[in-house]
Image (cartoon, rainbow, N blue to C red; front, side):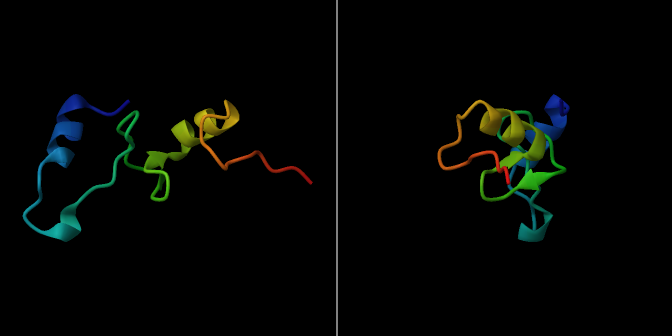
Length: 61
């Protein structure tokens, strides 16, 4: 879980647009971020396994 201060700091508008940090909507994690879904890989996997993300299925072959 990300620190509350770090999440609040990333919500503020940065001085330069390149300083913007992508954070997970759910847990606030900044690493392993999936832009398309706007969440981290861990939260993505949990929600995909539960079937809560439309159009995403577990692959098998």
